[in-house]
Image 1 (tube, rainbow, N blue to C red):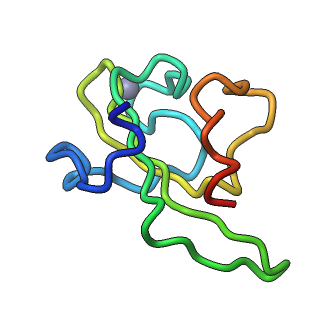
Image 2: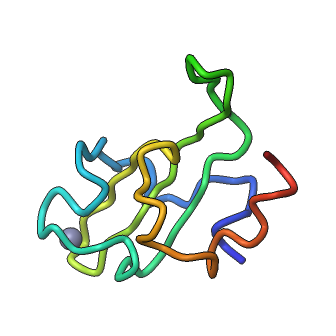
Length: 89
Ligand SMILES: [Zn+2]
């Protein structure tokens, strides 16, 4: 699955940091993104000593954006994409 490859897809290079957990251009949900990539190689520790990492989304509108995993609304994406998360928590 592309989301868990170790090499960043080319589209992540132009990703912009989204303040909301949605596309900064068209405000679409990340559920509608055509590609997802998670930078699991470079987790950052939060003040609570939990890890967070960059999640990149390539929106169907063409915009690429990213946000911290810790900022993802828990109910937004469900477990479908993130089933493999446990093995790097
Ligand atoms: Zn968009």
